[in-house]
Structures are given as C-alpha cells and as structure tokens.
Image (cartoon, rainbow, N blue to C red; front, side):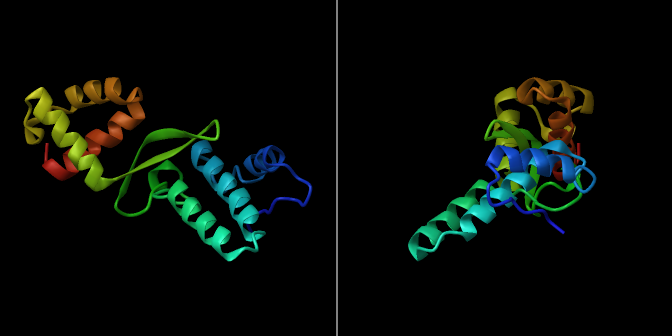
Length: 155
C-alpha cells in the first residue's frame, strides 16, 4: 500500500521517509524518487478545492510526470509504452528517469547520423557506445540509445 504524507510532514521529510520505506518496491533510486515526489504532489493536489485550480494542477502534474512509469520495475520499466529511458534528469534537485518519446528519439538519432555521415544499419556497437557515452555523459544511457538504434535500424 502506498504511503501518504503526514498532516504536518514537509515535502523534504516525506520524501526522505518515502525513499527509505519504498526501497524494496523501487530499488532504482531515480524511479523511487519520482514515485515519492509524485505521491507528495498528488496528495497536495487532492486538497485543492477550487475546480479551475484543480484542473490546472492536474494538467501540470501530468506534464511533469509524462512518460514516467510510477510503478515497480526499475529503470528498465521506468517509462510508458512509446517512451524510452535515456538516463535521468533533474526534478527538484534529484534525478528521475528521463523518459523520451520514441518519435523524438528517432528524430534525434537520425539527425545525429546525418551530421556524422553514418548509416544507422551499419553503425558498429562499440562506436555507438563510445559516441553516445560522450553525447549523454552516461554509459547506461548510451547502451539504451544504442539498443534502440539496433532494434529500430538493425545495426
């Protein structure tokens, strides 16, 4: 059962408690932070009584967490269908999964290939990992991008 913020608990206190209590359900720290932050935001949003403000808060909430799968499964399952996790991004000073729409990833990859003058179907894995590690500053992100390239372009 998801935990809820206490009545007098600050955001910082709740997220600290949540990060500790949810460590088994969400072993991946960035995803666990996104889950805890979303629980706090959802609880705060539930207390809004003005309809217009509530609707606008819901739109902002959905935009903020777009693409992030707030369920168990770690970074492998951190994003909705149609999104791909490319490392992490900053949210409130903490890192959360960076879920990028596959359509956007496809455009980025094709632009990169065009600029570099390579054919994605012939892009060697080791070269892809090296290039993408530099581009995304993370070998984990590079592996996800190169895996995406391999699955979509058959390299």
